[in-house]
Length: 522
Image (cartoon, rainbow, N blue to C red):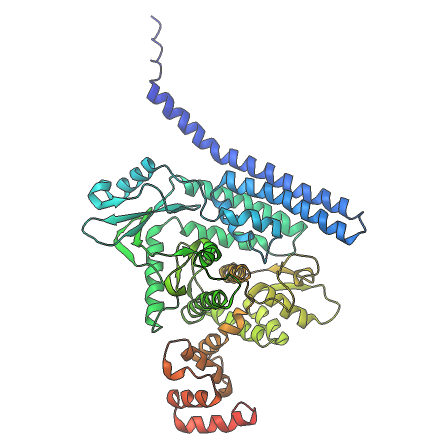
């Protein structure tokens, strides 16, 4: 007797098998899509470079480049928008006026917080699985429409049972971790190719650090700890914290769900529109003062985090910044943070002093101390060009008359040096500085974060025993001026003398003042 054939699969089993096969193919489909689109954009530029080389008229060349950038911008936008995930982060990095062509920026800036939202029934399922309770058992009210959706998660406004203030609930997109790690490995391969052919910069090391940092973002318990640590540091080190940091509700945090206080504010991208709505001239003195205050607050917060703590928020893109009442700044999303090793913290502090002082010898030494390996193509003025390279990479200031600074453009300092080795640990500082520069350009302000950070960097080096000259301590009083003590408001040399008298013994003060008179400081 022949054996009976196996029973046909049930509809549920068929669906399960189909879903398993489809899910296993998604990374391959994404990889194919990425390489196809990237090859089209890259080849488009290569062919265009040949075409434009035959055109002699400079104005015609500029018009041709603008059309080419616009075509590429549309293709890059489609790639980032259609694939989502990690490529939304790529759009945040390259879509800045100081880094990319204007046509790219116009298209990519709109991708901030515009990732496709996870449907509410799925969000509800994730929440109930993570919290172990029904949604109605935890929340009195939960808005099914997200406040925003980004590459890894989306956020909803809600109110907890028994509370009278609102909270924000951050919920991770299901299955996003596997897709994003596939995306970043594809980008690593492309970065390795580009650094071997077109861009003489260690892009691969940067993408390796991105892989590590983004891997941390999938654990919301780690983000909650980071947010709490930075909040405590900033609130403890200032009479009033330069930025607002949401308070975490630590009892309602899991790997994929994070609950924090709700902060009311306007996204910084909408600041101009909000100013105009209130009847204020966006180009007037009041608007300029508000923008300067916003930038000062961010710069002070980052200076304190990087130099005094070493543990800092490493993702200040516009989607993570809210402007609140009185031009106060709220800094959101602590998924990307960096704990900078002490040797790099001190090394970057020394580089900041060199950049602030326009010291080419100091900049060259600092690059070596930080482990940044460069190969010079300069015929002359190598140290001066090294200073320009340092300021391009690690400062926000723009040279006089320059409105945008594109590091990889023709004639830039990166054309005169190959950066052959770049420590992965420094990527977070590099990215933070470039995001701050993008914000300053977007606000229409030109400022040097190195000059703003100089007093904090000097204090850090002095406390570490790496800054021994007495007269350099004078600049450290700027720390007091930023801490809200009205006694230290006057910025005069007599004020500086009084502050020094209060913080160091009189005998040493007398010796120091005599020495510093020789330098013409008093």
